Length: 278
Image (cartoon, rainbow, N blue to C red; front, side, top):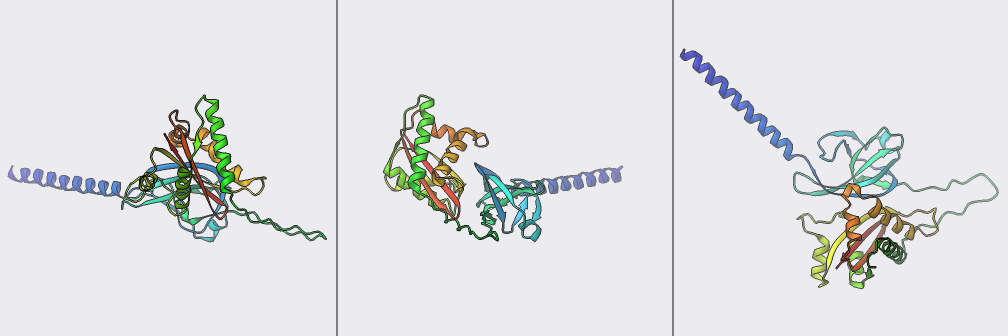
């Protein structure tokens, strides 16, 4: 009888220990995952990879392949979605969802391992030669004017008041677009809204929202800067479901009065920042 009770107590103790270990393991597993704090959709562009680890999900819990291997670096990929992830250590990082053009390799990789695909001119063995294309240069003025014109046209369709460009807003938007080259996010490592801090520090009132984008300059159009602005505006308003239409709501807010537009070039990529105010 006593032996039977001791056996029962021992079994209960073992089960309790096992449950505790399982709970701790699950907690540790949960703590090691990353969480999404922002999703940005841009125009689909082609990229190559320099290396890095490809993950199957945004939690970064399952590694798929090592992209530094030659067979993966030789492939061409497409990407249109950028994810802001907060890791278990509290640090934030930007990851892109990529998919190889053959459809066999896809997943999430840190954006720093990507490089845009540049078109090459192939010389032909003929008497005439083809002059090399000039390097593409962003015109911030053209980008800004095209975006503002297009935005006010979209607002007019919905019987909303036009927005006025503001020099102070433009200056901060330009500063924000430059910051996106190193930190593609609305918030800093401490979770502070970066644009809000800039507006406060410079004594500029009224900030109501921010939209950020990463696009590219297309050498096959007459005005690459205007083209990039139009694509960004379209994505914000008509292809924003992944962001719960947050960008569209900011740009088409009925009480918005002022807008600042900034754009910065890095290679063939264009980083845009839009600041709106009441």
